[in-house]
Image 1 (cartoon, one colour):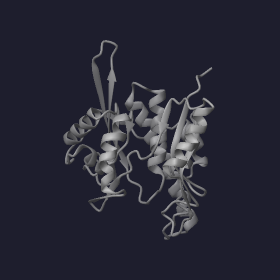
Image 2 (cartoon, rainbow, N blue to C red):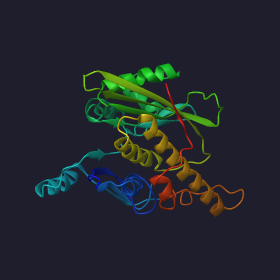
Image 3 (cartoon, rainbow, N blue to C red):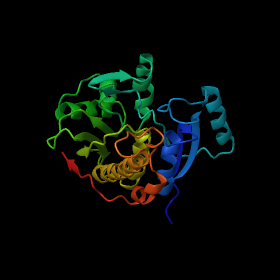
Length: 284
């Protein structure tokens, strides 16, 4: 019998759609994990819609919930998943912008990242955290070394604007994992993936990616290549199914709206559970 693995997932929650805990809970459960979800935000829907309503949990309320778990001695977890993964910002049309106040950057650098085992920044976030720019694969690898030195053993730069030999239709992602041998030596595995772009704006993909990467790195703790191939291939299947259904709902020649672009998560159960590998990772 497989040993139970418990995850405390502290993320946003929406009534309709798949972001935050809604995007993370289902795939983790499908992959055999027990999830305790704390909803840091509870909204009617994600903020990609025109309107939303809801509540934000403050620090005292979060602490009270955790105290209840602690009093009952049920606060023992194998993993804590929180996506600030770190969601600090991104690049749009080549220009980077932060989603959060700039004075939070030192908090991420000094408090959050040093206690994380895995981080999944995009290129802009990796540059912010490391204080270095990325113009080449070599510079990206150097940035990941800086991030390793801050604490995390696994770093995946989920997207970058580095040019792909396969053309502009492809995005490059890079991963790096430090592994400690019994003799104390450290071996670092580095990988590169090239993923076909999807011409649509999805919400919740980062939450889904982080959840599945947690699951697959748990199942393949010393094989970042396989963990990332399964994660990214499952993402590919979910997004392809989503865009196909969204376009069918929108009608020929019409752009799908946010409701139509909600991730087709339940319909993708088999792809999440046992993804056909369609994105191969190259070991660098």
